Length: 277
Image: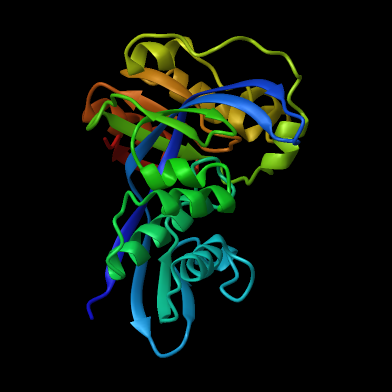
């Protein structure tokens, strides 16, 4: 049987509004999810025994023998659908760790999609989304894998029109930020809902309420945001998720390239890509 390969594209929060802290300890969110065309990669094949390996530029930052969302996703899939087969799963880790662009959530979602394809289960099977919700708040959005408005914990999703093909630049200053620590520093102020309109209008009018606490924890984010805000041709720049990765949208590839070269000259991680559907 041929291996199944699934991309785990980087997740972008075009806007992220924190409305209030819920009684269950989570935060009530409104967010505009979008996805890059590029990211990590999951490869799955049936094997005689379970094997999990990690390759890629950020492989050394993860422990293939420890707890991982990929192996949790595979175990949950097997339990739910009663599949006893073993799998060799390879994660090619191209995205930085703890960086606000999906990472482990996208990897878990890609694992579910790959296993579903391998075992003849429809990719939109509702039970897959149930498994995803049990793995983490961002995993259902990453499983959907297209532009969406997220509410609740971010897992109440409504697909909306995207901006496929728009040039996108991701920049990370090389620092990891704890999501829990960032949320703990949120000031508790509800600054209102996401606006109506087309996606770009809504995104530009929006904000990321986690940006200020993330910048307090990781001041290196300041320099990234300053560079992207000043980049010629950037139509929107912002931090994604709880940081520290920031992004900028451009009208053309040449402007994106100029900004990417400037960011790379600072020694930062950069990814030149485009928005997906």
